[in-house]
Image (cartoon, rainbow, N blue to C red; front, side, top):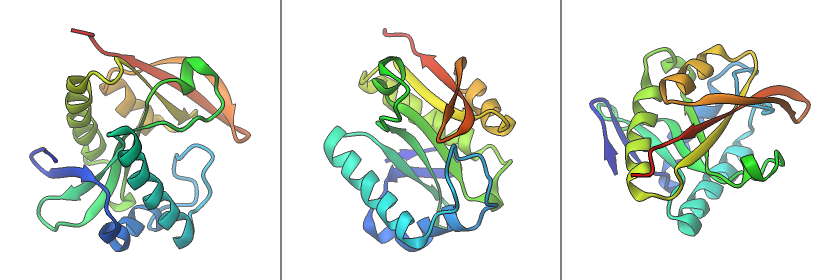
Length: 173
């Protein structure tokens, strides 16, 4: 578990399903998730199971973002292998991801959580290069990426949507 001033970060578990749903259903239809339509309850369930399996397979993955006061899951952040078809220079590296419940956007939660994730991830020396993909119009996520040290290296498309690919290279020491 990782702790910050406002948050607890831990791997998702089956018992998170009810509060995890709010991360995905209480949002506008177009919210900045590259190529993602509104998720159904079934899709959210599959996503939860996928992340539990990712942790079991790779010993890292997306964390549940838990509000320290309420105990509710209010987001997911972390790194995962997606294999999106962008080629080895992208797909061969852990991909960073962040998402906060829509009603809590704009409070610095994603940045706070991902900064803590990178301290943890970099100390484990899994990979000194990470990547992320952001819709070209999503200036908010681009700002988060910049604060985390990501630099854009390619404009492309994903599922027919224009996106930008970013990379972050940490000091290998």
